[in-house]
Length: 389
Image (tube, rainbow, N blue to C red):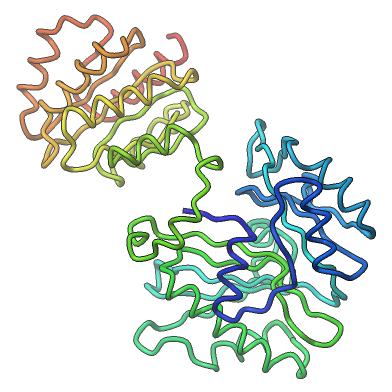
């Protein structure tokens, strides 16, 4: 689960990560009022959407008067912000963050996430702040600094000193950076975050360091421990079909391709998507029905796939273990009765009750259902059917 910048900064302040004065606003008039409360003579107006690259998309602007704050807020609110992370459709801006300006001397990148190879939390830093970390990694990976934190010993001051020296921070700023890094790690660890990111982290004229931006993502499986964070979820920023799928314990992510996918097991689902791509197609979704899926959850997953107008064919790839193949077959039939399915459906069923499942589908006399014995041949058929072949 992701949250907005203003919500992430609320968390930052709770854990002692320095930020500038700021407040959320839902109207142009409220934006002006918040700027008046903040005071000063320079403010930053930021669109609050779950996407990076807001500045390049016109979602971050400076204002030097209260009238300008209100005018800019009116311009951004309700607009469709398009960035390299929103896709061509963009996202409607429903809220803003009004923040005080600052005397910025240098910008850095700082984040914490899990390094799966090292099985440890890892700080990621760069002196190229304000840029997308993917772009830095692509063009100048040597400028990225990585410092892993061994879980057995936890965060220690030497982790921050190593980062500070690598970033070439001035001596006067290093003690503040150590305190900031410790607070950031405590925030990451305490909230069960997947990612905590500051881009940019600003060095001010008085050698203070502040988080100019804030991004936070959390492990959905741990949200039951953090009801205050779960309450921050903005359903308007999420795909409606993904929200619906979550209610049925389905792991679903909408994509842009034409081959709908229904698979059991995350690893098999990813492998299925890779094979579809290898056959020249594009998956329309990631859908893992899980190990204990019932006919009802299978039917719901099927319905969600069918609602996507981009889907031209469906590839069902089930290796039956806990999720029995006959349950999947009955789910397909149930979904067909509910919604109707005229699209070609390639079905590869193997494992527990596979023979029974095939018999169920054959007896249903569904001409648009095509049996496949192997993963590769099934993917090839699904891609060809999506292309009209």
